[in-house]
Image (cartoon, rainbow, N blue to C red; front, side):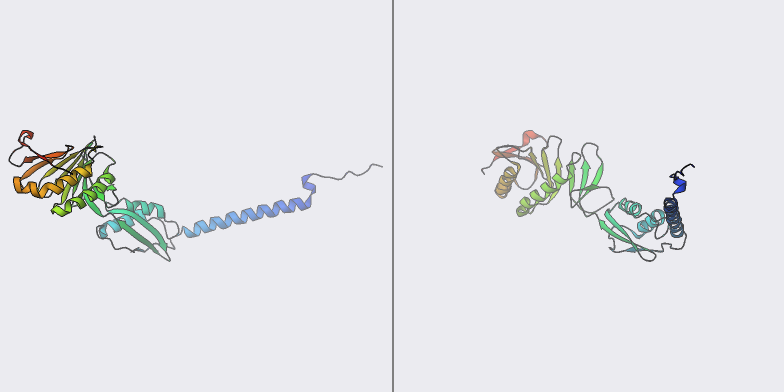
Length: 263
């Protein structure tokens, strides 16, 4: 009589087969449910009907907002790509930052931060015309506002903005307004005032810093003005212990008048 050997193969383990069957049914149910959810939310049952602008823009037009809404908002309330919509609004000329959210049941909520232009900007390397905002960032937009003109190498807009604020405060006691500021590739500075006078500051010097030279000029200017009048084309402040003035009537450096000033 032969002894019966217990069968140990997979098909002879009912408990394990039942577990595998349950898992397969669970995965199938989850997959089917997910497919149904995707199908349901992609149906035209939740159309986006409204754009709600939380921050009424001052420079961005209603036509621009509507155009982006028509071209960038695709799909329904659940499937629209908020990141794509945000990026589309941030491409508008005067938009610095955009924030987009869903608002139940059928709206898109939009918040805009617009650029606040403080100066015109010309990149000296290429001659490209841009605008500078109050953060020193360069952007492209059309404007006919009265603002100072910045000229400088690529990437120096923030430096120019900081210097403009500093120099404007120093010139304020004289009643001059700084309407132009230029920085050369060699880091030499040139200021243009609202009366047409150009102040050549030149480069930073260890023994005669920019601020010291400009402060010296501002201190003695009222007395100098009594002697030479106000018709000065260029004030050259690159000298360590003085400055030279070029009258409007003369365009040659040889006609410049040298004026010594003490700190």
